[in-house]
Image 1 (tube, rainbow, N blue to C red):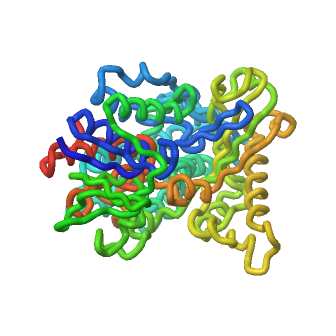
Image 2: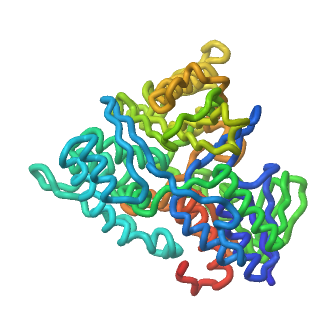
Image 3: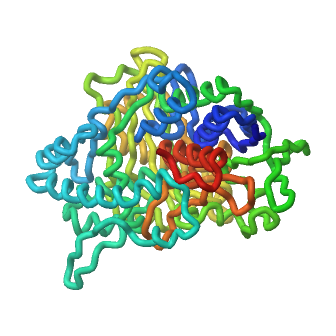
Length: 512
């Protein structure tokens, strides 16, 4: 039985902890916050409750596998899971709207034809066929296996882009795929919204990001009763059932190294917790020090952080009045000026007309009673130091009046609410109050401003996260900042990979 220390109680870290405990190891989790879940948080006020991280689950098989492998009680006995149908409703800049059924290729094609005109559905269907090829080529090595020592094959884009134009060149980016292959600004906006939801800029994301809409439309979209936070509750409970020990309010400040191997962690109070293996579930500044990994700065955690500099602004809306019958759970209201939105994202500033994702769960556990409704509105924004300084992309330059940053944030939130009104009837009249969360809140809770993106092939390998085994022996990385990257399902996969590497050693070849 090995002693294992896990740094952080995020979803990937807890997934690893539960699996390692079942394998017979003694596992202790040190979390600097007073609760678990990492980015899967909850905001509560006046009887209203809101998920502050992801609001929907894709690839639930990842957590089904976790619960099967760590105990006799399956996932569905621990949380309620329901398919969201329609999976999403999209409101485009020209006012056109379309509802896409859940996990039905034929249904999506039919809906697009009806809403956008004959031929739109077949173009989207043909695109998904090519996306399926990319998925089949990259799924196992990018999701279910540890990264190999030689990652150069991942530099090539697996998406079989059509060769169009005079020079017969394929599109190199997701935005290029939308322009060349879909040939309708609304279909292009639909495609790009999937990249934005994962924190990727469609103008720079590789064509391989086509696997994101394929994954969602093929395997479906699911809601966890009580919100995604209820899934975090269930994973935490499973860890406790398997005798994982949690120490909250315990900040890890360093990794103890002996003979070129991690042998424990150092806590803020000076205590040392000895370990045979250390699992880091979050970016830890101490790991950037030369004596540990030889990295020069936080920018090297992980490699793909160079290309992903986005976070989320979430507006929690407390509404009076019951949710109307037939209300759609998720509505994407697309920007009225997509070019300006993407330009602002690339330049590191807040745009004038953001694309917003509106979630209306209709869950009685998230509202004080049937005469009220809780709604979240989310937009992808640049993230980084500007959220910590007094300079919000020109909103508060040196010498600007006090409160300029807060004013810029509130103005952006107001624009988000204005867009969300297309998804919520009578929104303005029903609004009791709103709470705004920015990347600064993400930093306070997780230690980083950004939301990690998923591992993707292509782009010269720039979107590959840090490998699970660190260069330092005995140290492993789990969670969204490690292979296979960000996203709720991806974090669960990283926990499975780390547990496999520790239990089976270098011979581990991936999940079965």
